[in-house]
Length: 311
Image (cartoon, rainbow, N blue to C red; front, side, top):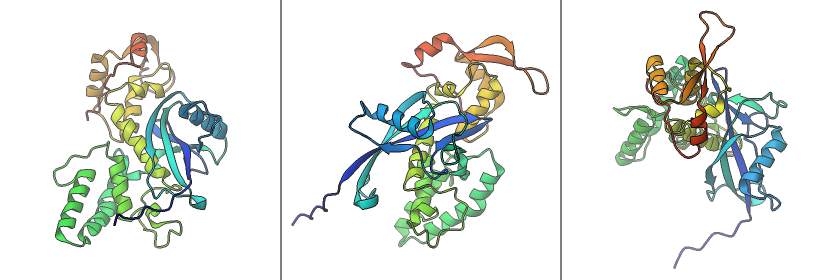
C-alpha cells in the first residue's frame, strides 16, 4: 500500500530580507531581535505584491528605506514548523543599500562575519579557526561515518566545500560550508532549542530558526553576482576612490585582491570615470575620486559587467 500522507498543517507565508551594506571596509547585514533574526513578517492580503509586502515590513520594523532588491530564494522545507505546528514558507529577498544609523539595539547593523567567521579569509583569525578547530572537527565527523563509502562521500564534500585535497577554495560555497557544519552538528542551530551539548567551537553567532541559513544563501548569491553584474556600486557613495571600491569588493568576497590587477580590469571595462576631484583628509597623497559612468548606470539593468575577483 502507498505510504500514508502526513496530516495537513496550516501554512503561513513570511517575507525575509537580507539587507546588505559595506561600511568602513566591513560587510554588514541589517538584523532584528538583537542580532538573532533578519527583518521579516507575514505576507498579508493587503499587500499588493510580495516585494511591496517585504518593503513594508522592513521599513516598519527598522525605519530603513530599501534601494536595489531582488528575490533570493523560497524556503519551504517540510520541517519548517513554528508555534502551533504551523508550516512556514519564507520568501527571501536580497537588498543592497548604504548603512544608516541603527534605530535601537533590537534592530541594527552587524558584521556578517560574526555569523560566519571562517568566511573572512582576509583574517589570520579565520585561518587559525579553520586549521585548528573546524577542519579537525570535520575530520572527526568524516571518520565517524558508518561505513567506508559514507566516509569517502563525506571526505569529498568536505574537500570540495573547504578547498582541500586539491580543490580550490570557492568563495561562493558559503551555504555548502554552513550546511556541512550543520550536518556535523558543529553549529548550535543543529542541536535544537535546548542547545544541550552545544559544541565548544566558535562557529559564529547563532540565529533563531533558520535565519543563518537564509543569510548564508544571501552572501553566496551576492558573492557570485559581483563577478558578472556591477551591483557593488549600489553600495558605494556617489564619489569614491579605487581603493574604497577594492575594499568593498574584498569585504564581500572575504579575501584580498591584487591591487594592480583589480584596477586594470575595472578601468578596462570602463565602469568608472574620474570626477576631477581629489579625496580630502587622510594621510599621504590625495587619491583621485571616481564615479560610476552615466551610460553604465543606464545600461546596468539589462546588461552585466564583471568586477574582478583576481588575487
